[in-house]
Image (cartoon, rainbow, N blue to C red; front, side):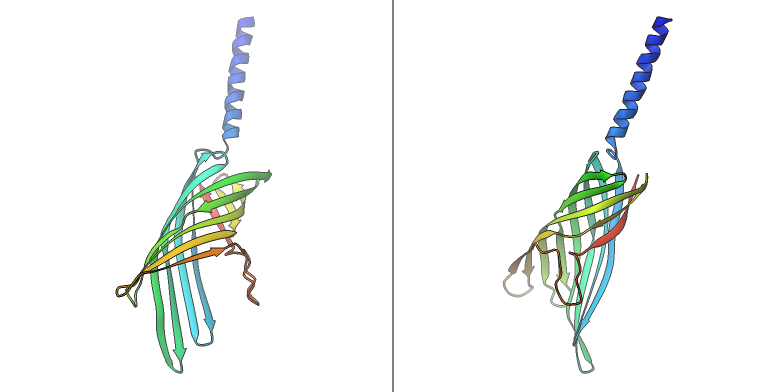
Length: 207
């Protein structure tokens, strides 16, 4: 009888330990998909600028609170100027985007989480008008918040806090040029347009 109780106790301990281990693993080993789809249009006196982004992202949790991801998509921008009744396209660029990223999560209690994200966006594009090739490499630091709705979906919001970008332009004729930009201000202080560093809200699907 004692042997039977001992075996039962060992089995119960094993099941409890296994369940605890599974609980502690959290999202480790979970795949997820998300993405960004956006379109914007801005008109000023004599000038209209449009831009669009399609960037699906997939990732994998390598630990309970760290995930790696990769986004591959396209972005486009066009600028047109109007003088009288004549409209002229002055800029028309389409680019391929490759964006690896890493996120670290911290629990805030319940189903709420805070995360810090670092990404390395790479774009390779071409101006359809001048045939110039444009390439850029960047570093972007973006904090955000994540809320777990259920076992297969979360709702998240994030904004760019710090970003650095190096852009080179190789014209079909003439010398290449390069440009470096740094932005550590998450607020756009233009009157009437107080946007927080490209604030993005979306959903993430887990499987």
